[in-house]
Length: 425
Image 1 (tube, helix red, strand yellow):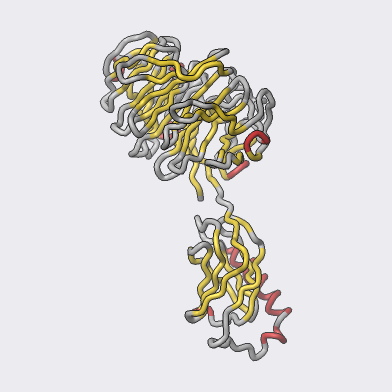
Image 2: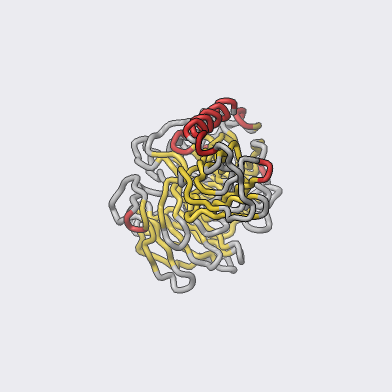
């Protein structure tokens, strides 16, 4: 903070020195309009220093207010035709408005806000094993393309394949075993239940958790107290749920593969077929399905009811880490998929069967709703482990992704055997 203030002071001194003659005797005219001509830089994130140019400014900072997209900015100094401000957190993209003694001036352009995203480790010590506990005292053993989900209270549920368990991670990072612990197939409560390969999980609005077990050809329901029961027989890998009515969908990851809808009587109806390794499925608030087609490295939308397909991102059998709109983007064997409250789509990029560290997508990709613009949300093309911001954060084979009601993103980081948490700063 001291460094930033020092830089601001230096900037103001330089401008003041350059403009000292012009400012001599300067007086703000409260009967004249406040004019904002431009500002620089035109984009940035929280903490960005922005210099605003205009006329009829006031050197009395007590009467000056600057807002970015309606959010008050910190005014750090003024000379006659320059105001220096600091962009506030979560300002968003919007108008730059200068208010002086009740009169306002608006910049001709909007400031383009660039949010930064910070990654931390919610739970896991990085070593394959098993232990419940809190934070870095916890051990997972994923070693598969496992998935996770988050409930309305911010509890995260993860399929821990090689420990034959479904784990619950509380918001403070405390991890407990919800169900499972032994290899086999058996219904029961908590540790009495058994799984062959717990693989993906989704939650409903009542706090129930559904888990796929492709080796047992089942989808199981786990009540909040850890009691399991079979919902349907079927080779389910990735799971999706329509939160409006609780309808389940699953992908069977075959070549060719299909998407199944689980009907109310507990049978699975094949509704989409002929896909190349369908990995996971998500449902928006209108009932449309979004599927990661792992074998073709594309993302498809299937219109509700008719299931008419559209490729919304990626190009068939063309791989890479390329951002762009729709088919101009490139993925490499994408896996987990989820949506936020605004129907923006998040894709866990590395769905290679062996968790390849040379896969180009060691990251989470974001597809903006409706215009299908693809960006890299967090991470990059290098496998590793590092908490931090933006591309400085490293993942190794992220396979599961979930978003809570506040927009916090959770990532199952396969090779690092950790659950990671991403917050917009």
